[in-house]
Image: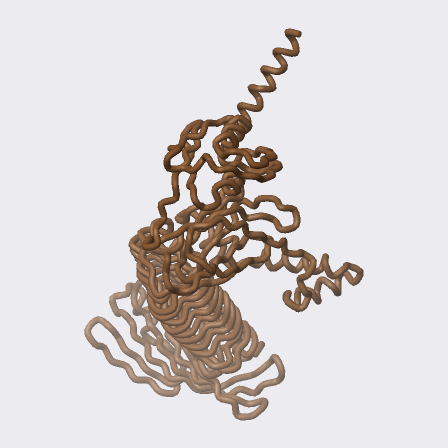
Length: 610
């Protein structure tokens, strides 16, 4: 007997504890009522629900009789059966307070409430979005699937939309504008109805070719996974940033609501403190964000104190103190104190204090204090303090403090202090310390060293001249314009060997398939044995006629020389007094501390390569 008593007490405590953890209005009860007084029915409800009603009998009509049947229904649903919409409910501790609904005909607002349910199972659905698209009123169903939304008594027709991820959206028009309870049923979406035509064709064909026996449903899933792997950089950056500044309901709405709403303007401090609680699902004409803002789209202008976050497109003007984060396109002018990150195409103008990162095509003017990083094709002008990176084709003008990089075809001009790279140049100019092109049709590379792998000019040359120097020379660039690196020495001198290194520029004119003329301008520094710090500068202009056989050629021609020598050099007299010993014309004069000689000489060379 004692054991049964303790078990009964334990069961009572467990039931009481479970009731205490569930909100009073959501506790389930079962009643069969036939013509009973409401006051007595309320007692039965409170006993089953383990709570106490509190109400004023003069305000709440509890002497009337009611009849109903309720099986495992919530206290809220049972009270709605009893009072309809004439009573409101409020929980306080273990009490449920009943109050008369004082709503008047002149009230500016009314309430719509009820449960969101799965139409097939009847299950109550938590975190479902309920909103009115004209007034932008919105709410989210709680953990029990209950929603309550406040709506204005506007003369405009109102429509209630309900949406939840993995369910079909539901719309219903409100006939009256008075407080009422309406349960909304949502139909689950079917997962196997996605047509294969809507997925990326190239991905589906590649997977199908590699796996011919896979069913279509598996192919679709594999393509969807592949598309998710290719999620844009902008989306990966903007999503966590946006979530940090949005409320829980806004995050739920962004997942649930597929429709994009339109609004003239919005103002906010941060997304969860703004005039628009559906910011992530709303396109606005004008947006003012004192700190951080989040919109589905901006049509005309947006200003942000710190950060602007736009899921889709921006048109017109956008400026932020720190960052602009745009998921799709920008069609207008965009400024940011630190950086712009755009997931789609950018047109017209974009500027940032540090960087611009664009996943789509870039058209127009682009400037950044550090770098511009573009994933697809671009055209216009791109300027950066450190570097430009263009993954794709570029048409226009690129300039940077360090280097410019175009992974595909360049049509235009690259100017960088250090290095320029283009995979292919159809027609253009490169100006930098170092320039590289993998293949080119028409290009003019200007710099210390330029190399064009295909379509360039880069022969290696062995030559002798009237100064009895044997020289090794490398010419690189294009036939229209190339740079020259050269070094040489007098091989027959042992005790007082002279050597030189030089740099120059040149051009090559074809005279047919096997003949051509080179015009080279070079400057050489001459030293004896070790490097001489004294000026010994030989300037040389040479003209040579070449006969070409495939990868081999012979060139011969005259050269005009101008040599400037510092006569303070301790080695001057024995070395340069009678230098060169062979010449066709010689002119010599002394000015201040320098001796200037000019003469006409010649050279003969053999060349390897093209």
